[in-house]
Amino acid sequence: MTDVHIVGAGIHPFGRHDDKSGLDQGVFAAREALDDAGLPWSDMQFGFGGSSAAGNADAVLPRLGLTGVQFINVANGCATGGSALLAGYWAIKSGEFDLGMVVGFDKHPRGAFNPDPADWGLPDWYGEIGLMLTTQFFGNKINRYMGLHGISPTTLGRVAEKAFENGVRTPHAWRREPIGLNAIMSSRMISDPLTQYMFCSPAEGGAALVLASDRKMRELGLAGPKVRGAAVRTRVNGSFEVFSPSLDIERGPSPTQIASKAAYEMAGVGPSDIDVAQLQDTESGAEIMHMAENGFCADGEQERLLEEGATRLGGKLPINTDGGCLACGEPIGASGLRQVYENVQQLRGRADGRQVADARLGYSQVYGAPGLSGVVILEA
Amino acid sequence: MAEASMADGLFEVAGGVPHLIGGRRKSDGRVVFPKPQGSEGEDYEPVRLAHEGLLWSFTVQRFRPKSPPYAGAEDEASFKPYALGYVELPGQVIVESRIETEDFTALTVGMPMRLKLVPFRKAGGDVLAYAFEPAA
Image 1 (tube, rainbow over the protein chains, first blue to last red):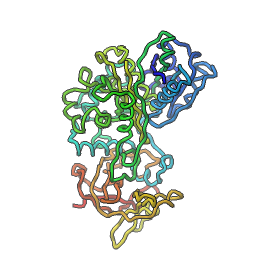
Image 2: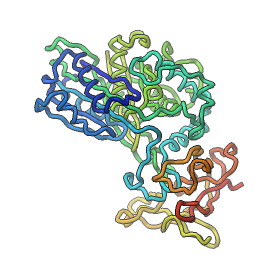
Image 3: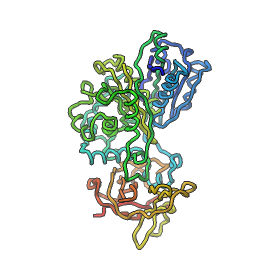
Image 4: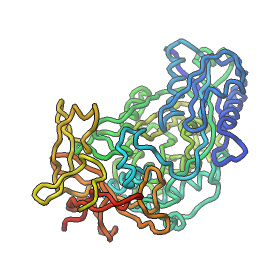
């Protein structure tokens, strides 16, 4: 089986863009990825695209060119963008194709979203009584984790402080002003212990990647990071997920833990080999817990690591170098691809102002509803 | 307790003590709450859940949730934050619930909790809901 490389990467800045549709932002990212690779759209043999709230991803076709290309819409919850990448990866690895694009974009309304219990197989009373908010799940999960593993609220604040510091240095970030620790800690409480600035916001944006087989990449005279490992996994019994009226007493691994393990095994590397990581940070607590779930530390070590600045730029394992979801917002269809885009910039030495020196292995993990996680490991 | 229950088959009172009704899957004994309804419910038998348990996790809802799905009668101005979380019922299951307390700062993982039935001020009329409160 062939290796798969990322030979082009494009992004439309994340944030709020009242004059542009989600589709506009997806098309922008796709064109930028093609320009980055120096290839025309007509060379693409396949496309996989995802959008959660901004229409059919397939709607990029009339804009990019109706070439008859195989194009498949991907919908997989919060891992929609990451799943599009997996589909493209398999398409090339299988030998069926050797050049194609994955694209994701989105545009969400402002504020917490209001789900319909029936869409989740839940009774109406669960929503009526006020138990059906994603923000509550995050508060519950990190509160228990903090109680069990000695994590302080200040550590949650440090995660957000770092995110905004990195956002200042990132052209595609939404939040590009620093916010101090005190302001983060004293901002409005949303769901204890998480304050307003510890949560990411629904946003808009687009991201796209051009994938090529090893042979095709050489034939075209291109270069780009190799996909060393890639996996999506879903929840098992005993995993704690959003919108759960009950949980099993016997606890099990999270989908992140099993996706992470699978990706490391594919790549033949371990957490200590990783130079730069993009981890799902829907809120500050998620980044803390995902550090452990992805094997980068033991439960509870985050308290010391954050105090030391280990995850900041210049630290021993920089995490969310572009500010993550906290500074970029979370357009679901694009978010997982943004992480990979950032790792591509880091591994190609193009992350001006936020470059991790000599980054060779980049790790990304996207996680979300209804309980799935996608991990990609790239090698420069 | 004149109000109608917020949903059928959610809880029952036995000997003056309220209990949630869970479902035990016939194939493997896994206990869930609430007991599944409809065709899925055929795979489960009802199980009376413990009246007391231990707080497993908690948070506080600080803003009025969006309607729908939230059906509370209060508006944003009259909304009061409420605690909610998960209570482990030993040997059975961990259930999610509103938590009745005025003192959010006193909540800690592992503290004893007890089930009670409480009126819920729903738009269109009160209904009877369940909640846990500190048992101490």
